[in-house]
Length: 221
Image 1 (cartoon, one colour):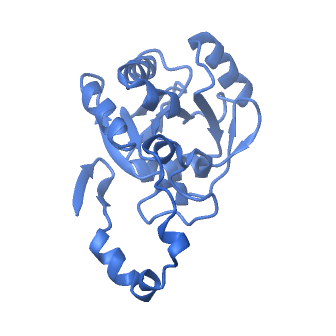
Image 2: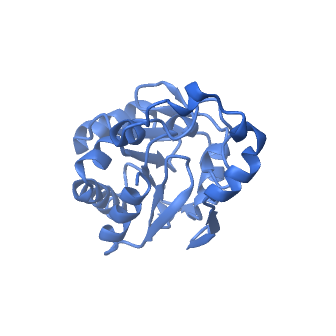
């Protein structure tokens, strides 16, 4: 059992033992028919391309996708975080009118993307969730996408105060709106595996990009 410490607590990544699986399978293994035994093995390429979990499967206890809050993306479409299942994710909570930290975080997300192996890069989703529900409407987020030249691998989300607050709590992100309308907030980039479990967090505004990219790449090995 491997434990990863993040700003939001301890998340446990549990790998199943092959011996345990065989033991649990018991009679089912013994009852395998010759036709089943003769089935050709799945090639490595197909195994890598296969989805991490069936669409209807339950999320793990460590998955942030258990949050059932609904968001709206910058095209105006209703969106739930569970739609990201099956892909590595880099997620940042931000606000579009931020003049310093948030632009740097988006630039760091682009730098992480550039460091990923091609096969991982193509499958990774980059997600921005706004704190600023009043100003960062879907239309405003669409404008931000155009300004930053963010392509289809990027998802920009607007949510209710409750949805944003719940997600921030899961990620260990703190934020507060100041009297001038700006936000003070934690600077946290969160890496998720295809099941929506936190595998790494880069905290702060400097360094740590190599580690973030390596953590994402490891989720598809």
